[in-house]
Image (tube, rainbow, N blue to C red; front, side, top):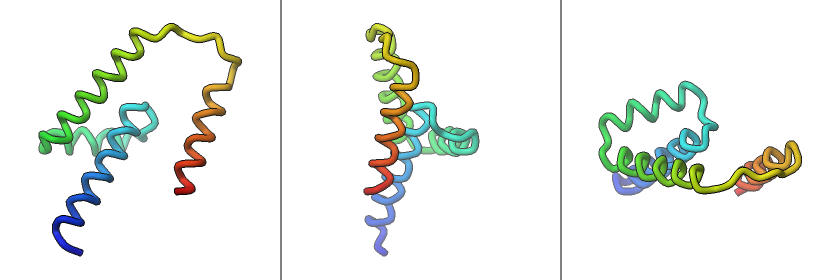
Length: 86
């Protein structure tokens, strides 16, 4: 495996971990791993801050919905199942 391929795979793994943290689905260990990485990696730190800012902004501008209890969890579960099949 060449250096460029390794860098792409590391970036992809970091992006996936970043999304887990931003979405609140990361384990405490995953969260800590990302925070330690962000101390050293400016690119990932910028991506994290941008993603967090976007999510926080959306939270503040979207009205709460009155969807049936469990609907959001059901949808999220289906998305996770579909993503894991890829």
